[in-house]
Amino acid sequence: MSAQSADIYFYGFKHEVTLKLLTLLHASSVLYTRPLANLIEQLQRLPGVGAKTAQRLSLHILKRPTEEVEALANALIQAKQQVGSCTICGHLSAEPICEICAHPSRDNSVICVVADSRDLIALEKTREYRGKYHVLGGLISPMDGISPEQLNIQSLVRRVSGNKVAEVIMAIAPSVEGETTTLYVGGLLRPFTKVTRIAFGIPMGGDLEYADEVTLAKAIEGRRELDF
Ligand SMILES: [Zn+2]
Image (tube, rainbow, N blue to C red; front, side):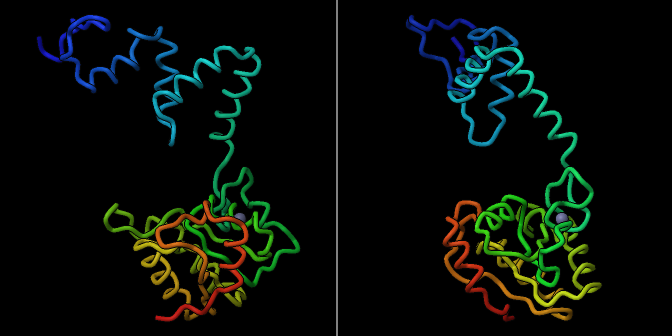
């Protein structure tokens, strides 16, 4: 009997079921009625959600009142429809200009450059930084086919060259891609302003998002000028 066969006995003697087929079965209507299988499949696409978690969440959702489930579904759709990027810094925003860029008392003369909005949020939580941000939207990575043109870099150069910016802080966690991006962006900005980088506390290959607030605050405090 081939593994592709539907001749499977869960309590029987057939052991020719491949793992792949089992996975398919789990997501199929053999175990779950079709709408439930679909829900599990969609949840499983989320990062960090495996088959077991997707099943648990799905069964939990089915037990909740209809209004609660509708509120969740609406929140998903509204967030997707309404949240875009700030036209100045690239941070997630429902308005054309985000709250940080629009904030009257934040220091316009310092721009902190981060890879993505998760890092910006992590730095904001330290409450140590009162300047502005610029979100690149990723890191330069030739291996993954990500070139500088695909990132929010030109708008940063325009922003720095066209305004009075005293300092740009490169707040990018050290990794091969992080170093490449820091040096590339730093090189473009250096004719216009002082470029510093966060110095210590962030482990190699680490994510800013996962660093604790004290470590991040220290990293900003200990920034140094970018040397080439
Ligand atoms: Zn902004």
